[in-house]
Every structure is written in structure tokens, then in C-alpha cells.
Length: 500
Ligand code: BES
Ligand code: MN
Ligand code: ZN
Image 1: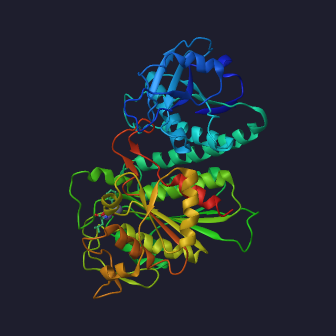
Image 2: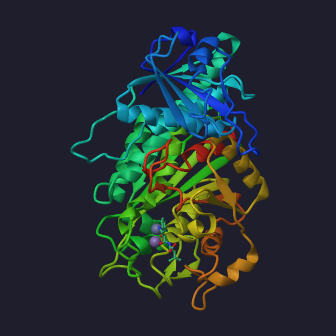
Image 3: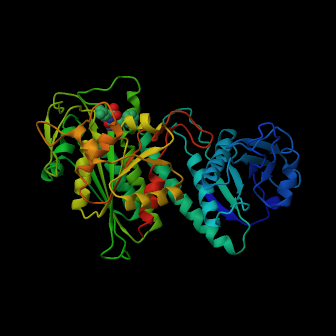
């Protein structure tokens, strides 16, 4: 998709579809009140072209609600699309811009121009960034292998700005937004790949190719190296699969990063297919378990964004990738594994495999010099029970670290809700035969999984993102296709930038 800025007057801009955002100013408490539509632009030509259409009750400017006008009077555009925003926020603008692109796609409208809102209090850089992020993310569809696939991608999105002194801020917002959203889509492509295509080895190849294109250092190791590093937990999961595991290490080391500054460690769960192993999962929905590498994909994609945005901070990413399969060589319930850190783990359920590969990944990232850790994983079904499909779970052993993360999500617009890390929960994972066990019983499953990970981070400030409920959209939304979401990429990237 081509993206550009223009400060031409909206009326004289030639496009297949001009998009203007609108808000309902009617008193929300008065349910009977007629909508009072206000366009988020001071432009008189657009306002008068839309005036009649928004004067009645036909359009209430609800979130992502659309109204299309053909041949709008006084405008060069062939169409005028009015898109509602429920509140004047960046998150709403991002969604509304996405809704415009998703409106255009099935109708084969290939170019559109978004009239950036100026009536809100937000800085230019933010409006440009949010709008283009929404547009680029909306252009993705997951129908990769359909023979009748018609590529209806939008070819050009233009952001119409008022020009003047803020133009360079708009330009930076556009550039950043494109990098971040294209990285998010890169994650989605990886996540969407089926398990027979994206094996751990192939995952490693894709990461290496991305690294080469973006000037990152990359190493991909397999079984021998895991044995050398004594990654007993990761190896335990991997031993049941005919596909070799991949330990993917990516490094970003800019020359201008302070020598004694932090090293950020990004750790991802990369289970390319999770059958559950010997504790096998039920058949219903098992096909979805190809997305069990979404945390790893988020880290690889965040590294892509980081390589292009060039923050002055060192970053190392560790992605632990394997299948989780049953079979004659598979690990069993009752087995005791020795993790790289030396801790012994009693296996209660072979389906709690994510925390095992992450245990070794988190330990290794610290060995590689990480002073601050963030991990992302489709770790538990329990997080979906706790938070539904609106917020991801975030856990931290450190309040300052969590504060950093809250600033990151304010920028990214992704939603995460903090869940507890408290010593009392540890009792649930104490083992009789070894140090800890890999499941914590019926209650608080997302928390006990996080408590397990905490065993491997020591005193290092650490964030754990449980994205199991958000990594896959079963149903399309007005602003995003069904399928992989790429959740985490934007927040992780933003978190890294907050250290530069
Ligand atoms: N990959 C799953 C978690 C998951 C479930 C992700 C649904 C996405 C959607 C994870 O490996 C798993 O199986 N977790 C178990 C843990 C249990 C055995 C303690 C779970 O959540 O049921
Ligand atoms: Mn599992
Ligand atoms: Zn899993």
C-alpha cells in the first residue's frame, strides 16, 4: 500500500473516496435526542457537501458507523464516506480509519484520502500515526491460500493535512505509523501460516530473512545448541516432535546506544502447533493451535519495527520455537525436567508447555545481557476466562516496569489489564518431587502460569503479556479482518522506545 501526505484543499483533491470523520454531539443521557453530527474538520466545502446527509436520523456517528455519498456537491472526490467516532480519542480514530479501508476493500475502491481531524486536542503526529496505523492494519486479510482469492488491497491512502508548520510532525507520524502497522501485519502473516508450512525451522528462516533485510544480527540454533545450553525444559517439550526445535536470537545494537544503558530482553513463545502432547487437547478448535507462536511472532515483528525506527537502546530477542506433539518420544506427565537455570520441574500436564519453553528463554535472555525483560505468549485459556477478549493480561514483578508499560499502551492503543503476582499464589506450584510443577490446579490459571515464569526471572524487572485471548479474531470487526491480530507488536515496540 502506498501512503502519502497532501495539504491540498479537500475540495480540490481528486480521489475515488474522500473520508471524513464525525462525532455525535447530542446529549448521551437523552435517549430520544436526535443526533447532532459534527464533522471533525473545519473545511467548509466538505461540511456543506455532507450537511444534508447528516442532518436527519439516518446517521448517528456511532463507532465505525459509515455513510456513503456519491458525487458529493462541490468536491472533486467521486465519493464522500463519513465515518463515526464514538469519542475523540486516538483509539477511535485508528478504528475509524480502519473501517474506511475495510469499507473500500470489498468494493474495489483502490485509493482513498483520509481527512485528518483537527478539531480534537491531539498533536498532529498522533493523528497521522493513528490514522495510518488503522488503515494499514485494515488492509490485511487472512485468505492466503484461497484459489479464488482476489487481491483487493487498497493501493493508495493519502492523509489530508492542513499543512503549515505542523507538516513535519504529520510526516513523522505517518512514517512511524507505517513502520509499526506493517510490522504488525508481518506478525499476522507468520501467525496465519499453518503448522505444516511454518515449522520451527521455517519460523527461524523467516526471522533470519527479516533480520537480513533490516540489518539485525540473527542466529538460529537447534537441538545441539539446546543440549549444550542445558535447556532441559525447552528440550522436554521438543523431544516429542519429528520437527527440530528452533532457538531464534535477534540482536539490535545501535552504535549510539549508551554503553552502560539497559539491554532489553524480548522473549517469545513460539509453539508452531500445540496438540497438548500426551495430555492431548480435544479435537474441537485444535486447528487454531497454529497460532500458539503468536507471542514469538510479536517479538520478531517488534524487532522489525525497532530496526526501522532506530531507538537508541540495545535489544535482544529470544524466541523458543517447537511443536508440542504426542508420540513415542514425547515427554510424559510425571517426568521431571531440569531447566537451564537448574530448577527442577515436575510435569503434571504436557499441555502446559509454553511456560516450559519460556523458562529457558527468559533465563537465556538474561545470560545474553538483558537487564529488563518482556515476554509475550498465548499462555493460558484461563486468561480468557478472567478478562474476556477485550483486554490482554499483563503481569509484572516491578511497579516501575509496569508504569513504563502503561505509557507504552497509552501510545499503542492496545489494551492490557494488570493481574497479580503475589507470593501466596506460589503454594499452588510447589512440587513434592522437585522444585516446582508446571500447573497450579483449577483456580487462577493465568496467575499460576505467571508465577511459574517468575521463578526464572530473578530480580530482573519483567513484564509478562498473556495474549491467548487476543491473538486470534474469530469474527471480523469493522476495522480488522478475522484471523490473526498481531496483538502486542505495537505495545512491545513502544515499550522499547520508552527506554531510548
Ligand atoms: N496454548 C495453550 C493456551 C491457549 C488456549 C492459547 C486457548 C490460545 C487459546 C497453552 O499451551 C495451554 O494449553 N494451556 C493450558 C494450561 C493448562 C494445562 C494448565 C490451558 O490453558 O488449558
Ligand atoms: Mn498447551
Ligand atoms: Zn500452548
